[in-house]
Image (cartoon, rainbow, N blue to C red; front, side, top):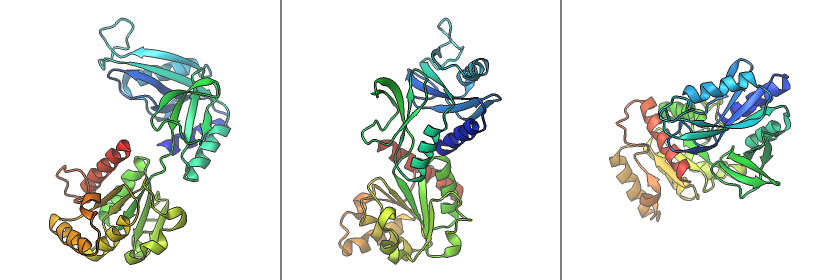
Length: 316
């Protein structure tokens, strides 16, 4: 969604269409979305993104249609027990910023940062003036109002440096990759069978690599070398491939290592790795991978794995 929103904004600006970036600056109590939620509105209504749907979003689209080029902030009461509320029953309040967009430069810079795998922040002045893109380290990981260059801005982190290495290109991996794309996870798919890790099979993967699993150390070097911000989802087609992949993953600083398979297989793999000196395998490796939701089909298993990755990302 992040890349889609940025690209849509850039396309609309370059086409000369009026476009408004609508963002949640602050939220208090129970609200549909927290600070940092973004959506784009054009002359025909919603373009992409969401600040929570419902009456709040509908009202913001009405305001944009009436004032498509006017920057301002507005606070909405989402409690039908209070006068002047939108009639929603959430019970909280949301402060919303309306930023008309005219300059393509910030969105070009933001997309360049994303494509260059560089963490970036979209900083929205509370005055409603043009967005600023920052790549400086030290800005908040979660959306927050900060002072930047002498003005208050809402700083929204756009890119997460972390990647998901999906080892194995089978049925579950195919379903998982589609979810990773929807959830804004950068991902790389690796299999020892070229037909199972092609760009055609995984169109949204940053890279698809065909390499034997014992040779992962030769393939994942340089910019592809795993870091502490990265995750491994190991779901190869067999016991040996899984063991080779786990062995490699344990030699990296990756902060999430999940392996698909039965408890029986887990014990056999852990015993083998312990004999090889990998004393931290039980501590670092999550297996069976995913949240326990009773998943059976490849799509259901992918949902459980994606949910666990969302929790992992949020915790970081």
